[in-house]
Length: 189
Image (cartoon, rainbow, N blue to C red; front, side, top):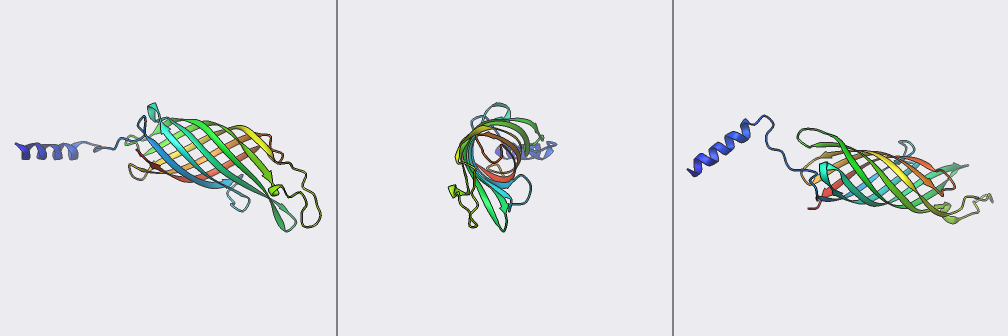
């Protein structure tokens, strides 16, 4: 009887047209993600960003994301680059709008509230040639819209690709930034 049960279970597994797929993006699942990418284009010399975030899935594969990020843009001046650095924290909600049948790929759109601190040239106002930087350091706040793709490599490891547009009031250099990034997420429960 035991062998008949095992044999019939194995036959059913192979007879199903799509096999058995893992349960992914379930309500309550949590993950940690690390991301990095470019700012306002694909050249990392012009700017880059790195971030760490905590995610928690809710119903219908949607998720909350809470994270911190460092962004640096570089502006050319003669033969040097002047850095603009932003330290931000964000909280957002992502709606999953497309996934494949096996739940390997997910496409999501998200909105986030963003706040933090910005410094230009690390608060050094005088450049090497005597020129003065007029931009001021200060607090920044605003929001972001994101388009993100998740690709499950395994049930616990997810590859991320994203495009994000941030609007930050309070910045003395630029209020809009487009971020392109790649990342990896580890599902922790």
